[in-house]
Length: 388
Ligand code: GLA
Image (cartoon, rainbow, N blue to C red; front, side, top):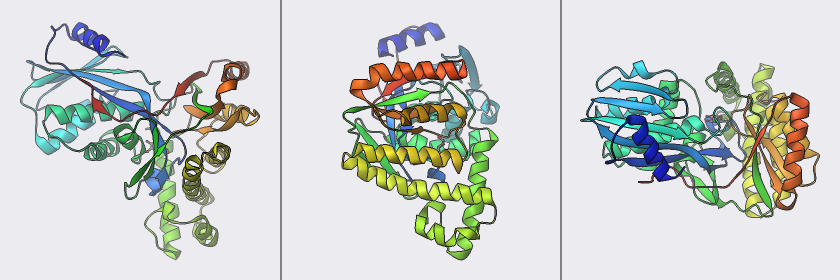
């Protein structure tokens, strides 16, 4: 949305005159490959997208954080000094988690703030709409508090908030991409050390398409935390025979040699996915640098199969979209992206064929499931920032 339109919406929503507004943006992300490796100390390969969350903020005289979620037409008022846990529900838990973090570190601000939150990402679709709300809030609070924290500290604060305030045991993938994304690049990030390499996202003659199943599942659902627990169980048994700090520090060869130490079959499969997926990220980064898009695509399909069979986080709708792509020579590769359990797949579709391919996929999907999927193209954009 244009800044002038956002300012107009802000003034209208809060019934206030012009003046003192700041505007912030934080993007959503697409993870090219490296799924469910972040909390296993592994590699991921995300890019920030051009869709995300905008925040407009200006001081008020009411001594509260007055939040409006413009997409839902909902309001939440939090008096300065009140227990932040009162805001730990609904959509407001995402901004309130960061407010809680700033209050714990720096106390309450001297005055209240009117805050409008507007997003143009599809919600619960695996494109990190929640991390983008959190990162936009973090960047805003950094200004309100005049704290000048570096972006990486805001990324860590956001992860802490998601883990301890919202209650999802997620890794750092989403907030890192939203905070640190770089125009025209994807990031090869080591979630153990937080070292990262921006790699030019040059996928000519293909376009990155997002294929949204429109099947929504909450990430806070028990499935995600269950996977984390299963990986931890696998690690504790593996490290009994070959001590290492995280699942992704084992090579596929070491896993083949010592994997039988993992007693429960389900934990064995989770570990297998994480360890092989980590290797796929290394291979995918090399393929992208070498402009070998067929190899990148092959790794994407392998990643999808592993998420479907070993990690068990895909669903019929995602599998259908990916299998349709697999049968077409105009697609280099496709896979589900994000946590799974619904949400989006991504595909590298040849530019010259997309005008025919996407409508044929859309029709096949509708014929099969009786509801529509949505399709968007995506480019790599910059991370969170103040726009005004
Ligand atoms: C969600 C989590 C991330 C990551 C992905 C799966 O997006 O928030 O931390 O675990 O799922 O790769």
